Image 1 (tube, rainbow, N blue to C red):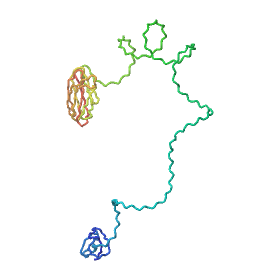
Image 2: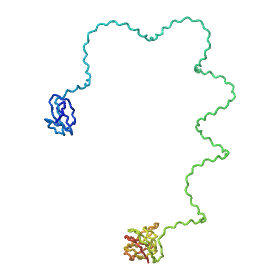
Image 3: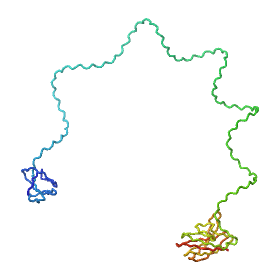
Image 4: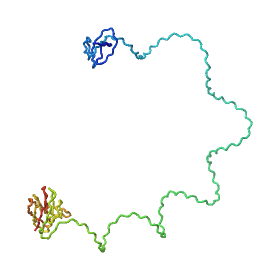
Length: 362
């Protein structure tokens, strides 16, 4: 099998590199290896005959490669520390005299010297012509006032001068002692009415005066709204025979109240208007005709009115239960001034057709 001869710098190979660079032959010992054509894997063999045809390529590797090219010059090293100072050398020979230098620039002027001493006064010259009068100088300060001379003789009194402006009013002097009361003078004109003073405290209420005459009767006022119906009253013979028909309750488990002598629908609120009152004590006898198809519980109520309140107190309650389409009677003692009413508790789910009642209290 043919093979390639490769140069490497040493016996170490880069395994896994799929391509190796070819190099010129060298007269040195070689190492034979098989390189995989698929993944570049390298394995060392004794001969190229050990490589698998078609799957591997035989290569010969020189143990000593050709001389490499010179590497690039390295960077300059850091400057070393200064060396120690050497001994002083011998004095040099005296040099030749140099040419004269150019004149220097003129220096700055020196400072002015101090003034000399004053010379002796010269002889007085002839008087010159009188000069023009100078400007009047400023007035000097007023001198101190001289001592007051003796008073002169009193002159003639001159005419009265004009009245001067009135000076400010001086502070009020202390009040002098009250003088004796003088005679009453003539009453002067009435002065203007002063501002009304604050209203004084209200005095105590005076005694009630005599009643005045009755005034004329006023016009009749508009009729007020009709008040709620009160309890039904009967004569002194108790409660005579009354009867009524009623619609049944509309909600199961709810208490409805009815008047024994009225066909009014039941209500969930107990008021005075549902009761029939008696002025004398009597025994109430209530008969019920149950039109419902199932059992219903009825109550005969004895009510005591509460003054000022439309809701009476239930003083006694007689309970009885009637089967569907059945009738029954309940009795209870009723005192004078008490009233009678009916309550129903419907516990079924069927429609309550209603009931009739008959009541007498004698």
